[in-house]
Image (tube, rainbow, N blue to C red; front, side):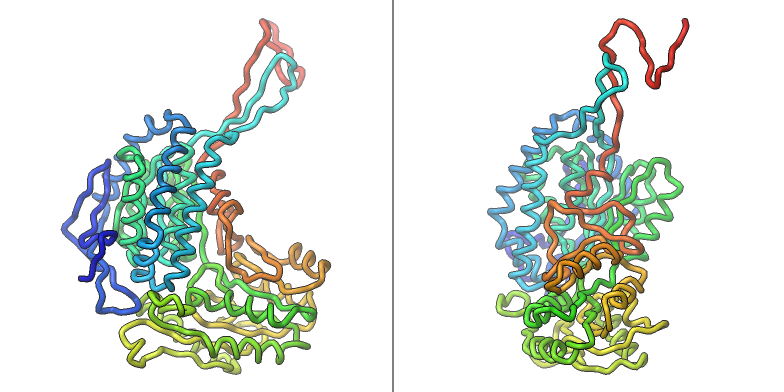
Length: 501
């Protein structure tokens, strides 16, 4: 096994400050070279999950009573460590999840930004001072933590997305149990090691490795107050169904999408083609916000298409440790099979194939899950699954529209509503799409990817349940309390109520 000091040769769970092994194990395999084993990790189940939850529950009272500012100071410690480890983290991430190392480094920086945001908010207000109906009363709204949070995260952003959830949860006084994706356990464990080095007390952050068995055990545990999840709709729906029977359980899910870029008649075509390319094929289309659809005004459709195809044909796809590549492999065999299955479905549904991508099998790509872009023209119509369902890969439909009303109808005609980009020079068109499309994040003259940590990250319909990730997550990891103080020597009731004793 190739190793470096930052890569655990044998992973472990972390429970109450102790690193623990378990009998069952699973390997983390590089998607760029399936002969490379990144590490071997323990496969947790109900016992490990329950022990971790119990540890978090035990640590919670003291952590909640710790000064919010002191909790924030630990995030400053963490920020300095992440700065030191940025290059090592990026290389580990590139090996384990297949993203190009430059993109991995950008993700580490995004995670650092979340840490810095959390540190800064430690000295910001945690409530409001409000007017009372009675002059002698002071009224306050204060936020309090829920208790124990389970954080379940995906492989495609194995560093930044966990920090979106771990950061607000821990800052506000919750203790957490973190289950990283079984496809990226090494970067998940390395992140937790950094939390420990930063001085977070034992039990405040616990780590359980494993697959759906470990994740479901966490969700079923009634001692978990909050479940924070990013991943597929099917898993998110399962979490919501299980949690429905647990009193006071809060569930924040950010799930799938069929995001799109709308290219208007007045769009600057070079800008539009660049935005479309990045939106569709960065990370091999494996972002929740990746564009599976480009909606293009029919008057510029042919010109735009030729520009986009010329760019797509030049993409460098290969070793994620080579910074000169645009993108790397898809994550595993199941993903490859799903994507090529949707390519075949598009053809069956009558697509005009413009670029027939498939698996790259030459000597430079033979040991990995490398796919070239698949681009096709498809008319919008009822029953066309390939333009409505999430593919999560380099699979892109170009769909013509005749006017802005039709573009809105096409964009909204899917079960998802996560991300939207509009390429236009018209402020009226921009406002129209802003108001009429169903989405959680919108961009103008930009790709539909590129979140910033101080903005909400979430969607509507099957894309989420209204609790955004990133900075907006404070709404899920705390609850509001009212606190009213009487400064008079008599009782005066609100709404003019008088009481005779």
